[in-house]
Amino acid sequence: EKGGHKHFMAKEIHEQPAVLADCLKTYISNNAITLPEPFDFTGIDRIIMVACGTAHIACTVAKYWFEQLARLPVEVDIASEFRYREPPIQTRTATIFVSQSGETADTLAALRYCKDKAQSVLSVVNVPESSIARESDVSFPIHAGVEVGVASTKAFTNQLAVLMSLAITAARQRGAIDAAREAELVGQFAHVPGLINQALGLSGHISDLSRKLATASDILFLGRGSMYPMAHEGALKLKEISYIHAEAYASGELKHGPIALVEETLPVVVLAPRDALFDKTVSNMQEVMARKGMVLLVSDAAGITQAGDDVWATIQMPDVDPIFAPLVYVVPAQLLAYHTAVHKGTDVDQPRNLAKSVTVE
Ligand code: M6R
Image (cartoon, rainbow, N blue to C red; front, side):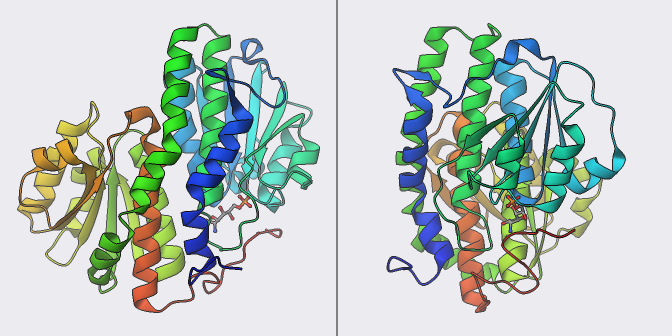
């Protein structure tokens, strides 16, 4: 049942190229995005996205996509904060609730709060017959298949894929991109399962590096742009299954506080594809290295060359268009957490104190 893997989590990490390709089959045809159910993004002025845990992190990635591609303002909130804050919902607002299980109590309550207030209530779910799917106006399935590991992996990746499909659709409908740009984006999108497959090939190397991480008491994750939420994803996965304290920071925030933590024993994982912000990230990394922090740089070949020899270790990723980078850089974040937990000998699939689906507050 674990398909030859030691844990469901490993099986689910390795299933990602296949389940993502399955999902894309539903959302792509003829070089364009085709939603399984139509939705009109021209009648709204803003989006509010609400979720918990990893699904909330997927929303924070999607905010970059909706804003950058469709020029639509997006607010993202944690369901337990949103529901009790009782925020005003302006007209011409679409709300999007993201949940693997579709049964998370706080997310469902937040959805019900929006039902008679928002112009539309959308959901992105893995379980099509779930409460969240049933109670939304339109529900978009992520087709990840059953996810057993408490640490969400393939569901996160497919949530990102569906949210990217919605962002591209919104961009087209609102005239922010033309058909040629959409075809170009969709062409790159279709390559992502192959790039994830390449990243999975780094598992042995990541396992070697994780032996050292397993001895750390704290680990810092840094990223800029859409890599900032990915830093959160890396830190969350690591905390959940290895019980090592980890924190994520936007690279630019380093000197506003967390740099005080840096010393020889602190691993600092830097998620940095060579994008427009890369030079700035390199200078943040140098600040860490000047204080003897152990930088683990996750970047492509050009980025690793540019970073120089002072980094503690590197994970060399395939080249990927920066807009799709979260879908590929999630893999080393998952594998670092997985192998670190395996080296520590923790219960990877059933971490202490956690449940797969949080159906009570
Ligand atoms: O079923 P949901 O997507 O609504 O669950 C939300 C969170 O409980 C979930 O993502 C949790 O954070 C995972 N264990 C993270 O790996």
